[in-house]
Length: 191
Image (cartoon, rainbow, N blue to C red):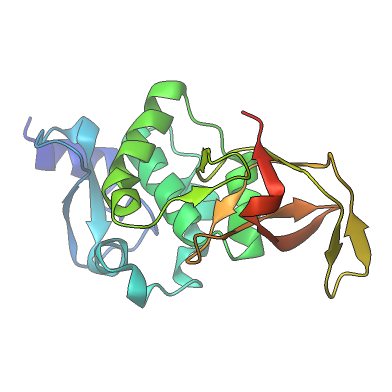
């Protein structure tokens, strides 16, 4: 059976991310040049264009990830993880990321997929100069007033599953159940 036949059978002739039935084609998941069904997905043109060009992301389209992230297919899990990270400023996407569990090898594959993007940006560093990555856990090294939320985040507070921002000096995370932006120089990486 060819890769295309395997993907059509696996997907039920629907996009493996959003379940659309039109304009389907094989999407090769980097890195690597293997074109097997295990490293490919059957995607609609909308999903493919938005994966390839994050500047045109329609956040409402990607609510489909709430379902597709539970796929038993590692390739689909990788794509879902990547897109949820792209959308991590959305509270629903952050909630989904916090629920999503990936086996270690699948998580490494997902991170390798984003490696090229990470290499072209300035790294986000903590107070000790350690590089922070999406999903890391950090601890506050001083009390911080959280503007607009009406509380002070206390020194020693752990912030789990952080998200990186476009600004290399900021990260996003949840403190006291509130999604906040924190300055990386006031954080210490703990994992």
